[in-house]
Amino acid sequence: MALVLALFWGSTYPIIRIAGNPDLILLGRYVISAAISTAILVRFRKDLGNQVRTKLSKILASGAGNMGFVVCMYYALLYIPSGPVSAIIYTYPLIILLISGLAGYSGIGSKTALGSLIAFAGVLTIYAPSQLDIGGTLLSLLAAVFFAVSSVISSRIPIDLVVLTAIQNIIGLPIAVAIYILAGGGSEVGITHVIAIVHQGLGASFLAYIAWYRLLTRSIGVASSIVYMVPAAAYIMAIPIARETPTLYQILGLILVLIGIYIARRRGS
Image 1 (cartoon, rainbow, N blue to C red):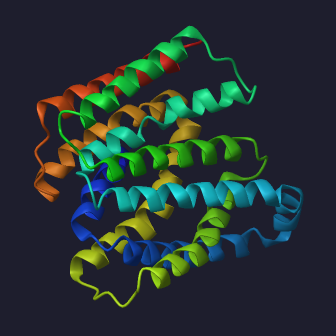
Image 2 (tube, rainbow, N blue to C red):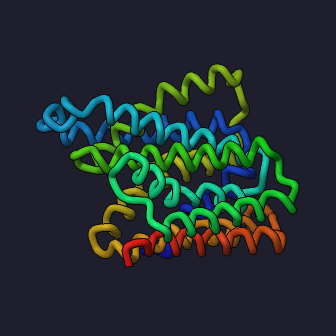
Image 3 (tube, helix red, strand yellow):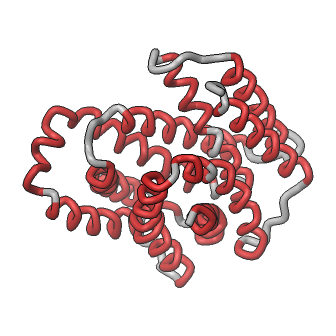
């Protein structure tokens, strides 16, 4: 299941890359995911008020952070190839460790610091020799920060994770509508867009999370391996889908990122 999930999430990057029109894909994703999420919340309606009442501000903040991650990721893929975007975004576990340390939830040990330095050296190795667009690179880093912040906030909310994900999807819909309108709207919908919307709305926002939560209940260790598998899968999937061939520097940078994450995540061993 971990391998299937990694391939699915890894395929997100080249699919969005070739589809283009991020505002259209964003709107389609949240229309589908919000509809499914509404049906889920109807099922939990009896105790929904008790779960949400005292946690609304944190839920809204986590939803906004998750939406920021998706928006930055989609728009980053307009400017730089899918492989580098995935590698940069998957520095988010390190950012989670750093935020948790600064917030006092956990300490920042020497392994966390060393792993962070190695991983960000990997980001520089991906960026500098390849002459990637600076805007796309910064959007990828911002996406990682948004996802890390959302993850830290979500982890501090005592609420059913399925309910939380459903609410986050619904929160994202009006933001997606606003972005679509501001972007001008009116884009023609082609078959590539339809595939991307279904892939994201039904898969990435719903089915993948169900598989993720099920995997977490079976084995946290196996679930953690997703962090290492997704960026590698994105590079592999980008070859047939987006016809992207990674450079030697990008591969070296990816290896450094993964080594850095590995070192930082072993801080307690």
